[in-house]
Every structure is written in C-alpha cells, then in structure tokens.
Length: 193
Image (tube, rainbow, N blue to C red):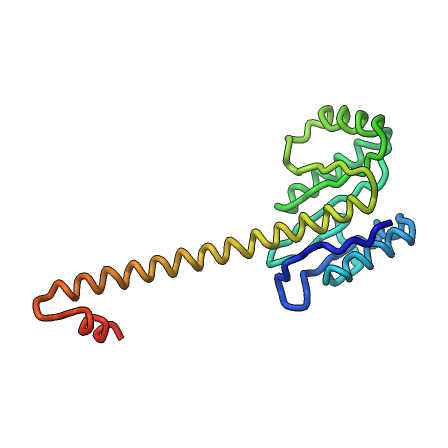
C-alpha cells in the first residue's frame, strides 16, 4: 500500500479542503483501507469528517463541492441498485463522479456491458474504472483538488477581466480629457485622482 503524497497547490493556507465520508460506507470497508484514506488525506492537508451523507464522499475544495460514489468491489449481480443510486445522486449533485474498482478483465467487461445496458447518459455522471482501492482513492482526491483549482482559476480570470475592463475605461477617460485643448496627460492624470 503506497502512501503517496500528491503535489497539491494549497488552495487555503494550511488546508486543501474538507473530505466528508459516508459513515455506512466506512463501516463496510477494511480498517487498513480506512487507515490508508485517513493517512493520505492528512498527508495532503485535507480534514476528514465521517457523517451520514448520501454519496460515499463529498469534498469541499477551493469553494466547490464534488461528490463521489466509490464502488470498492464489483458484483455483476447487484448493478441495478448501484445505477439506481447513481440516478438519484446525479440529480442532487452537479459534480458527481463514480469510481469503480475493477481489478480483473472479466469485471471490467461485466461493468462495460452493464453500463451500456443501464441507460445512463455517457459522461453524466463520469465513471472512473480503477484497478485497486488505493488508486481509486488517489484519483478521487486528485479530481476533487483539480475541480477546486479550476474554480479558483475562474475567479482569478474574472478578476483579471475586471481589471482589464477598468484599465480600458481609464484609458478611454484619459483620451477624452487629453483631447480637450490645453489639457495634457499630466493634467488628465491629476483630474482622475
């Protein structure tokens, strides 16, 4: 079991965000996997809360919430329950991902067949097949973090656009004022203050 530390850009000094774990999901997992999750989150500056929530995980990272269903074992005989749950959750969460652990070729083939039979719209939500539990959780954390960074960058882009708009407005003001006979740039800049 690897305890890899992600190269995470800190969204908030001292913290990357909060991870909420479904308490029933936790009880169904092996204690060593829960220990891996707690250690991995701590190493990457996420706070972990175990709470009664509908999805298996909700990450709040950079001002965006991302929900996850984490299928840690694939049982081809109980797919209808899983797809029914996903249908309900995709209506409640704008950012929902489903991570499915498929360590064998047979499980992967079974998943692909059931996915296309389920009638789920491709990409809504996004399903992420993984080979093992640790890989699955690492992908969850990376995806949640990436969504937070994207949200942060959108804010930065808007601020840059607002600044550009303000500078363009100031330039237009200076052009109008300096077009008045007898007023130069120095006078126009003084008028603006």
